Image (cartoon, one colour):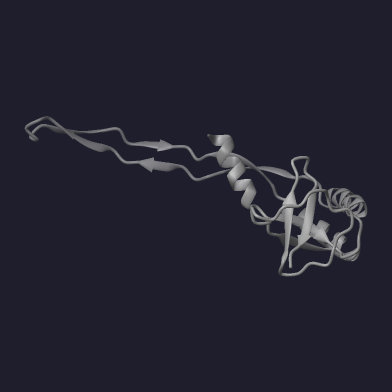
Length: 149
């Protein structure tokens, strides 16, 4: 059941890639890898531990069936959740986007094609996009950008 729900959600997720009309997907992949490595060097992972504030759960009033004899029970502090955050992640993402922009790419999100659109294969050269463009994401992670109409 969970797998079906995950597949249903992923079927709605747009294809998010860098795009430059006429660029080969192989060149896009090489440029993306180069920019990811540059971004990691320029803004390395910097993990910091953080903690949410504690929460106080007040005591509750407990009474017998007559409602006459009551007492207070409980009352406790629940410690905040401890988690780790990479404080350089936003900077690293900006460095990557800038690096790709310097190479002529811009980030795009292409909606997935409606169920009725049938096509096979994979994109090897990035086409010019229009409002009628959509993507079919293959099981192996490759994709096919379709310009409908």
